[in-house]
Length: 199
Figure 1: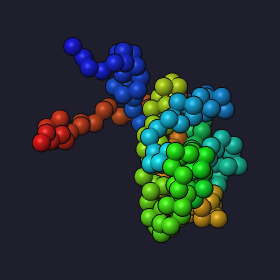
Figure 2 (figure 1 turned 135 degrees about the vertical axis):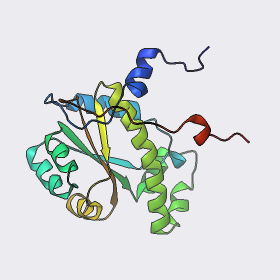
Figure 3 (figure 1 turned 180 degrees about the vertical axis):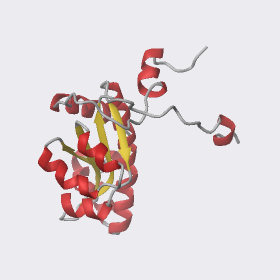
Figure 4 (figure 1 turned 30 degrees about the vertical axis):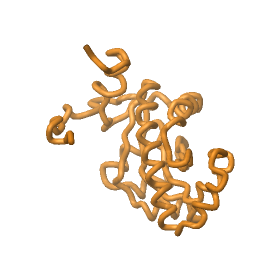
């Protein structure tokens, strides 16, 4: 008996049949799809309900032209041709929203405001990366494919898109439907006993 409570179709869509795409089709990603993806992923767990992830959606040729030169070889062409590209960043001043997001912790703003900027940036990045994982699953749930990438000039992206220094880029993610020859055969994974230890 399985302890997984989603059906086989959902398992396949979210996990088993999902691959990181190498190519994308030409079907556009609509603003409504982005909104529905957000409505699913916004419930990701974050420290003190801080919600530090910020997402910049690039769909226009003009916006994409600002990013493509900052991508590593191989990632530049994928980014140029993907229907939509998301820049995921962490808001290093996330705590300014805590009076609304964490009313159950009255001193949440003051606590985080007393932290060093470096510690607050690390906290923002940690929670934003949790949100990014949920975002990938939400993209898959919308019938699209997600290609997260670290191969880019991070300081360059920060300077180009976030010059005031408040946001810190985490990763760039292309999304859309599969294109021709969209992915390699699935690579091996570590087995359970190599990863999990019971104590």
